[in-house]
Image (cartoon, rainbow, N blue to C red; front, side, top):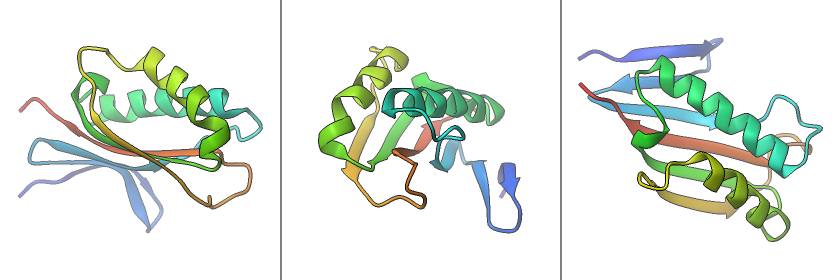
Length: 119
């Protein structure tokens, strides 16, 4: 059994790993937390592109995405607009979006996902 781990975070986790043709990505949060929901979402989507490439995948192969929003009533439409500009219309994944308390008050969004890898 081979598990490839990418971008470990100390002793706690790997930001992304690949096993048996699936990429598993931990919840990603924005590094610049001063931006609004659109800016934070675009940051995360760029980070996701980077991590998927490290693991040999891309956004067209996303199977499932989980999105947490600090304020779903306020931010859902703007987050969706950034997401729709980014995701290929012909490769829409399954997705769930919920409201949640965040680890830091300035974090407006977190995204975790699984994606396929061509073997």
